[in-house]
Amino acid sequence: MSNTLRHLLLAVCLFLSLGLAGAQDPCKIPRNASSSCSYTALNGSCTVTINRLHPISTATIYARRGSRITVIVLNPSPFEDLSLDLKSATAQAPPDQFAKGFTNLTSALAGFEISQPHGLSARALDASGNSVPGVGQIVTKQAALLKDMQKVPDAGFNTSARQAIRAIHKIELPLPVSACEDTTRDALDPWLKTASWRADVLKNLNDALNPLNSAIPGFETRIKEIRGQIDTIILSVNGTEYDVLTKNQKQLTEAESALTLMQSQLSDLQSEAGKIPDQGKQQPLFVTDLQRKDKNYEIQVWSLNYVNKLGAVAKRVSADKYVGPDSVSFAGLADTPNKQTISTVNVQFEPDTRFELSTGFLVPVTPYHSYAAAQSASATAPVVQKTDTYTVVPAAFFNFLLGKELVVSKQRMAFFFTGAVGYTPATSSVALAIGPSFSWRSIVLSPLADFSRDTKLTGGWTVGQSLGTATAPMTTSVWEVKPAIGISVRIPLGGASQ
Image (cartoon, rainbow, N blue to C red; front, side, top):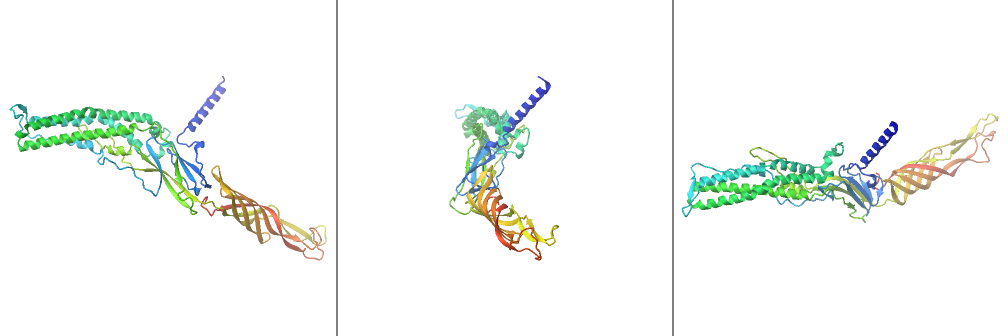
């Protein structure tokens, strides 16, 4: 194989690979899935396609009363639930049942302290005279237990929790506008590689939960044990010692509750993240005429909105940072609105308009005539001379719609029966015309019959005839029918293409 042929084959392969890559570009709408609604014509039922990765709000769509606009969303996010809502309506997600959420929870855990005043007895006797731990020993146990509780979030917890929460934070925020412009497309990874995202998040959440799951039952047992020891000596302690033991025990109980709440909320986050599907669900949404028999226009503005599936649980797990011995912090979750707008769909429902105006001009294809006396090289007296004048006739066109407007390649096309009234400069007279018309978008082309005045020789005079002693030939004004082409721009009385 020659080098030239080899280079040619490589070029063809490269071209094909680039073509396939372009065809699979998620930021572009495939031709076979593009919108069918026209922005220049009065549509019947049609479709609007919005790419979730690169959303653009629509221009006003004009539609007949009673028709339905179908909104198709390509590349829907597996993290979102979509809805199409009237912009004037108010929609809210269910209220959060966990009002306090996860904010500053670990900070509160680090703030618990055990009181250890001096002079506490080391050991004591129970009711039977047996030696039991005294107030000093119980306080030491309380301090050790609290220290163990405060260490739990640091034991492999922060790194894993930080990574999981940052990954969730990324998909909670709106997709960056520049996501499709970035050649690496890294911002699209959670959307297009959701299975990998979910596996990483679940692993990190599991690693964060393991120390909590293994430690909390032991903490509960130790709290009960200390509670039992306090009950054993409660009758033999003084008021100061009682206050110390009770306050410390309350600190332990609240710290254990904080850990349990942290465990519960991270478990909720793990459960919800595990429910995220590999791909978003594509389902059509509809814009409908709310008063289909009304002859007035109905202008509707619809919002394509989304609710993040992890939004509610994320608010409950909106951790700020843990203030512990190592001051390890992890990122918080975004407090997103209940609903956010992707784009808007604007629709104006209106009845078919049978009649409309257009303005432009007529171009008669045959000339207008005028006659005068002129000198001739072959005659001693003036002769009859004819002058042909081609002119443009400014006119107003009255168009009556035949059938219904058509939509071809998303552009308006229509057929009319047209009448026109104009002014003929060549004869300073009125011109009337009738005939069919064809309209593409706002341009109207009309092959018409032009009824206008023209000048004709009379009295037996002919062109080239010698006038003799006469100063001019005799003429008369007559009506004639001339074929003409009309070109005009429509002035719709309806809303479309204004």
